Each structure stands twice: as C-alpha cells, then as structure tokens.
Amino acid sequence: MGQILTVFRSRLRSDIHPGAEYGPMAADMEAAARAMPGFVDVRGYTAPDGERVTVVVFESKATHDAWRDQLEHRRAQRAGRERFYAEYQLQVCEVLYERRFESSSG
Image 1 (cartoon, rainbow, N blue to C red):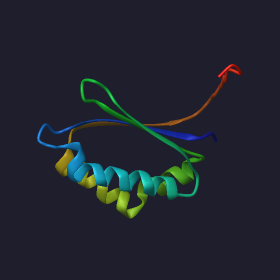
Image 2: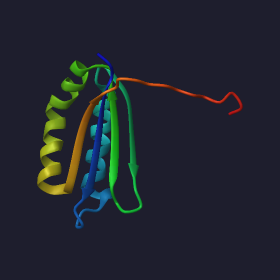
Image 3: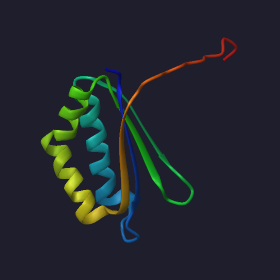
C-alpha cells in the first residue's frame, strides 16, 4: 500500500481572524503531525479568495489513521466545526503513482 495523502480544503468563518485563536491551534496541529511516526510532509496554501488548502502525507494508512485519531487532533477537528470553519472538504487518497523531476541547473 502506498503513502496516504490528505487534502483539507476550508474557508474560515467571516468573524475569525487567522492570527488569533485559530493560528496557534493550526500551528500546534502541524507540530503534532510532524511529531507522529510515519509523517512525511505537510504544506499549506491560501488562495486569494480565502480558500485554505492543507496537504498532509503519511507513509501508510496505519500511520495516517493514528494521526487522524490522536486526541488533540480530534479536539481541534471539533473546534474547527464548532467555531472556525464556514465550510470544509476532506479527501484522503492513496498515492498510486509518483513521478519526480529535478533540474540539474537549479
């Protein structure tokens, strides 16, 4: 089985300032993900229209599921639904194929 990729797309509620309570919680959740066994990578992006996208990669379904079920992560998920997000979409995918290119000219 291949790596597991989670794509989390979200929009904050209009009354939420990203730097206040949400920002520290998001930073804590990223640090917790990085500390989990099997963690590979995490990247976050914010589009000009306010949509936020976070991509998290774990080496296996078992390590992904351990991260998904981690107690503080579950609490953050609940807080997101109750206080922070106007909407979100979550996709969990298995990496079936990967190809890389890296230019030698930098």
